[in-house]
Length: 417
Ligand SMILES: Cc1cc2nc3c(=O)[nH]c(=O)nc-3n(C[C@H](O)[C@H](O)[C@H](O)COP(=O)(O)OP(=O)(O)OC[C@H]3O[C@@H](n4cnc5c(N)ncnc54)[C@H](O)[C@@H]3O)c2cc1C
Image (cartoon, rainbow, N blue to C red; front, side, top):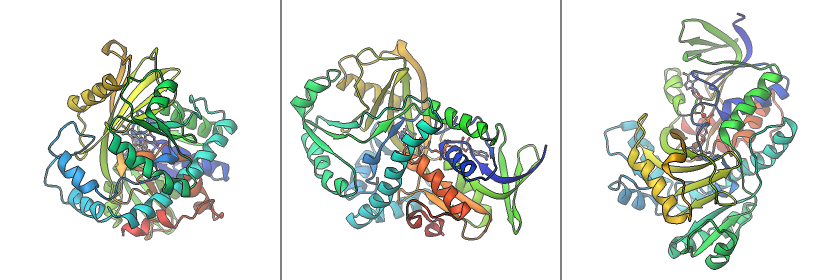
């Protein structure tokens, strides 16, 4: 096998695949090195919503206090497993320092730029590459039973509108007339008419197809063990002891990235924000568009091929267990809100994934400050599917010297060094 390549992409999730596709379109050659199966990690069982609406970052005024209360509630939507882990506590200190309205607005603007660009680019990609992934442009609703929570999110509509994100506030009674799948008790909803959704496992499979059809190579079962950047490119050693050489390399390994780049003196503060989902066969009476049960922080997505409940955010390190308490919280929320919740006989998959969370809720996209040929594309947190096409395009533009569609400054790797 020829071990010398143009661009090596380390990690074959939504971000690695989108970067590969954009680079191929820009005339570069790519080889993806994926430890397991392409698209099989965090990009597989997520909720599949494409959400400019989620521009506001997790670090918001009031969150530290709420998180402290939730620390003692094992089925809370945001849970921190108390433990001694200096990297986690440093991350939390930086996160907490950003829970103010100025930093909130800075992150929200930068997230909105990436999300809006990605949203329109995705429509183009679905058409141009024929991505068969149950893409739907139905919008998404936040629904509320708690009036104070509803009023809080209704008040957030004005800053979102200023960032180019459309919103509609719907009264509870009206909403129930429109959405027969929900039980009584909804006090109101916030609709985001421009949000969309897709089936994420199909999306990544289709991206992989488009990459291969354009001459991109994908090596599965190929775990990268170390990277050695030099003046003429990047040498990569993989688990079987062999090496690959790339003129450039992009590290797109989500929550696995920090460990691999630490020996190079590079810092990327990513904590795994563990989330869960349960996938069912198709539900007879399902919501018409994705909804977020905001009081419970549970996302409900229905496709023609199935139905998914997902969410919860747990900071428990690189923990690989399926926590039944947290899975049960998803099912409980479905029973509380839906007239016809799914039952156990319909379950197809119980899943967890590690959202790659940075403390400013922005990904790192760009060149390593220390190595000319090494690039990073990681840290997309809760929004890697939503941000994938814009991230891929931005990486390709930066790597080929083209003028990028959006300002790359907020995502620079330098902010973490
Ligand atoms: C419950 C849940 C719900 C979510 N819902 C949404 C949603 O509705 N919308 C949205 O936009 N986002 C959502 N997300 C977030 C989204 O899933 C992630 O942001 C996104 O999948 C990250 O993509 P990625 O390519 O960076 O990571 P991944 O898909 O994890 O890809 C990284 C790849 O690197 C590979 N890798 C790791 N180590 C190595 C190594 N040493 N060598 C080679 N390869 C390696 C892994 O195997 C993996 O395939 C959700 C996440 C969760 C957990």
